[in-house]
Image 1 (cartoon, one colour):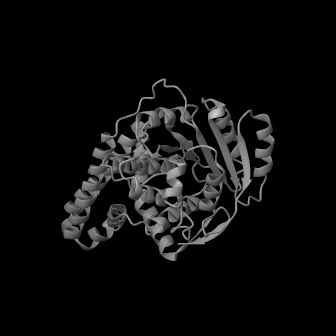
Image 2: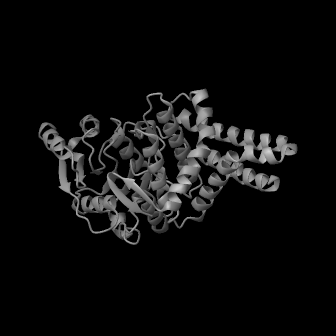
Image 3: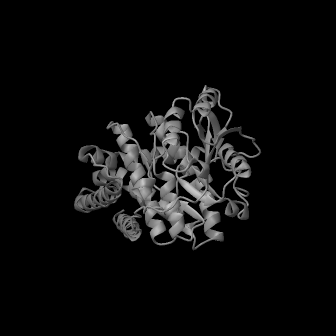
Length: 374
């Protein structure tokens, strides 16, 4: 087991260091005071989001961007709560171009169907997607506008952070988000993007149709962001960017229970296995292996007490590199890491990994009141 451990921790540490280097390679974009002239269609699918829509709609009303240069398309995906009434009431009070449409299902992926329906009726060239449980920063559109005017872009990923009230559950999800954002920016830094988040994503409408939208992966319920990234990378390899800008950070709500948080990660894992990017698949494998090795380290020590020193070195190395990645990412998001909860989260992550692995092997997960297969 010692040689296996050396191999795993070496590859894992190397991968994390590459991510950190790539993260640093992307310079923070400082939004200059440029003229607003880029037009946007903001696409937001929703299902049973009555509790969260007021926050979203308030943030939309506070966007610091000329109203005639953007529209908002909200797509109702068969909500059974009061979501539609909330939106209808708010639309009348907001002096903005907001449309409410119904989702038209034609595939196994409701969200991809919703985005496709919205893109087809959108008026503007740039499509921005976000989620109904998000809060948009006031300079969100302006930061995209400034970035587009300075870069030859077709596809732009941007940062997302989880809200946290300080509880261990929410702090864990925020830290997990930091690690995913670090990996996302790190991969973009080396011009080989492997992750992005549909809660803060932009691409050209013309490019969406050129890559034939979600055709070819609409049998997979999740992955509207990742599969679009893979298609865009194939067609426009040199025009994919990450908008590393504080003014572009979208805030999203964490899951309310450990069961929901694990189920969400099972959903994420279900699309990873379907990706064609070898780098992302290998990274996922070694992240799982490193965490499982940590989880079973006490068992190894029990049966091989003479190798206690080695296992402690492995353990400390894994904890140290994880802490470094989280610290670097949290600094960009201007968030202070709570040392005790961070260390506890790093210890707990292998357990979560094992539970997610079991959930992935089971092949089914629940989301928004629906049950999906891989």
